[in-house]
Amino acid sequence: MTKFNTTMVTTMGGQAQVVTFALDWLLAQNEPIDEVIVLHLSSQDSRVQKALRQLAAEFPGDRYARASQPVRFRRVPITRQQDPLCDIQDEVSAEAVWQLVYSLVADLKSQGRTLHLCIAGGRRIMGLMAMSAAMLHFDHQDRLWHLFTPDELRKRAFEGAIMHVEPAEGVRLIQVPIAPLGAYFPALRALAQPAYSTTSQQAIGVRTQVMDQIEREHCRAVIERLTPRQRDVLRGLALGLMPQEVADQLSIGLTTVHTHKTAILTECRNEWALGDSPRLDYHFLREKFRLFFEQG
Image (cartoon, rainbow, N blue to C red; front, side, top):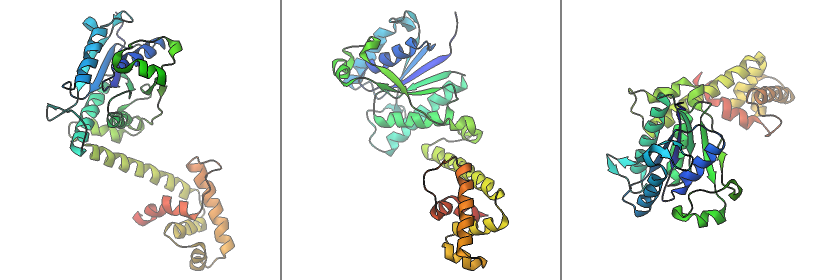
């Protein structure tokens, strides 16, 4: 039997149909799903209990009855210090969600699995945390999805009253574009190593550090293409001088400063791929280059 090695991960509240709607759509697109993982809050909640029972009936013996094919079904409750988490009401519970989602996605990717992450149901912060983890661990073949269900159908299907629909009903997954930063910048992947105590704040810190480094490389590339006098003008503007102050400091005319500024901004448009818009001025130069010159 062919092993597909592809997992669909879905966030869920009390609506079991978000899982089957998403899975049916992916299978209809010939995506080789062989595992489904549902992230949910405490099963002590009656609506979550009902949804999990409905899903268990859809996957008897780790087979998806609708498609009559092997699909392993796993439910992953969100916990805080091993206790079921009933809701996400503060920073501590939000951190628990981050830890679980981060660890789950990292573990699946360490197994070499291709992921389809559907932020379909449950608390919105569950989806946001899942997106954050995806940015760190996704590769280019992985996908992040939003489930679209027409309003009228959503009402009819409420709490699993309808578990499957025909394509004409309009249910579909919409791909959410994200940059797989970990694939581009291996330093981010270091967060997955056991040596790191990976909290959400640490993840933000490392991502910020990496993005700052990217900006420095852009700045350096622009500066290398400038003439010495253009660099002097850029330094003055970046450090907060007004154009006339730059002219006075460099003993050149104001018109010359503006000419150099235009050339500098042209290089910036090319380096940051900004095209013809937005309008750029010396405020842009201060924002991008101030720290570069201050830090040396």
